[in-house]
Length: 490
Image (cartoon, helix red, strand yellow):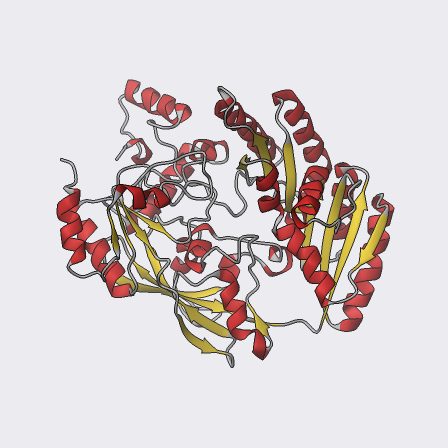
């Protein structure tokens, strides 16, 4: 029996603010995709609550009527995770933008999920604190979305990803009840359900208040720009720097295509235009420590083949160097309106040969690939550039993306470092995990959501969407065995 969407809309309007329910077709278009525009699904209904109580009421209504729901923040995700692929109520938290509490004495801050990432640092910078996780989209992405995807960013090499900086969560569970996961303490004795929730991509509930760890601003910061004649040489520099025991705050790599796009975007050659690759290395800490690290990193980059190593002279120049890196995807999007961004991970030691292999794959598929990524922790972000008007291009683009991710897995890496699995990469999850592993993960999901209404169809391979999953189900059926939960299509 289908959902009576007009009746559900009427019920939602009874407790939500005016204009908090979106049902007009032209307005719903704004929610038909996330940052991954290759796949679009217009939802039947969208709500924009402003409080935990309103979120809980909407979710409880869904639970009572068996209506699927999808949590959505700013919509900047890159794995199709916030898209209503199955007809669902989309619950958007972008109006929940309050800073609820600041506790500088204990170095923590509590915010609603719609608070933009960069706003957290802005709220405490005057007191000498900052929030470390900084995705490239930090001026647009929300903390709730960062929690859902376990986002990283430029400084995740030294300071870790979102899960390392979330102390506690207020969560609306899929039955509409409200609970707390974790606490305001660094270490607690209970089962780490906080850790299970972070990175669950909206499949275990919706976070409505998030307590974050703040860090003291470092005494000294230095940024180095090293340019190379090949991507392989830049990858070797990353390997040597990390092997030497240096721990930069961030270490980012860009290839020639990206360098040219960024320079054109800003109308100034901030980066060496003739370089095949460059590294941005940020070192922070005490003054003496940073000075010694700068000297060693410069030596190692030169040893690996850097043509020049330049140090930013002041805070303004440091900001300019990072602005180019964080604007790289936008710059590429300006030159190539259609692109497909992936998110594989490889061991740092494998970077030189993986980058060479991606170059070969690019030539083989006849599609340019721009590389801009978190080199320090091996989190690749290859952008496949194409013309959407070319017949059959989407299949070729996806095939190249799959080949790159397969390469990452074969090198001992992962299909995702921070963008999540969503609907985009669910068919590749069984490259990394066997049937028993996937079934165990589904047990966790079912404990939170027995009705399978929280972001259904995401993360896990299903027969309706993945050929390999369909083959496994056919084998089990032929053997007369019970089907795993992943075989159930909503």
